[in-house]
Image 1: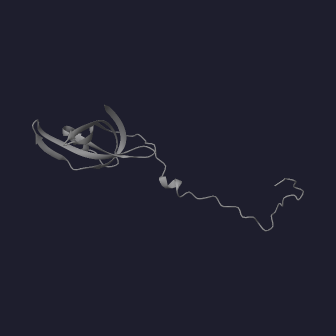
Image 2: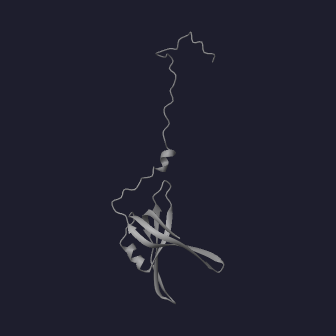
Length: 131
């Protein structure tokens, strides 16, 4: 199952390499932050030649990433990888800006009107409302 996501690059982690029965391999993890109302951070992995793309990127770059999710079992534990197979730098696109979260918590209340001792327009005395 393949997916696509847009996000901003947060950090590129150190590359890892080794040798397996198939030959040499190299992988590098990187973190993106999604561009949504409630952003999420996601750790993705680039394998072999795709790690070269990460060298050209800087934190803050907006990316479009196609990825697959793969799980495997080892010693009765399950491990899941989010593998990026296509990484594209998005240029010139303006991303929607999420509202700052403190806006909802630090909003100022409107001033409460204080009754004056002598109002300028007193209510008529012949008001016949029942309350």
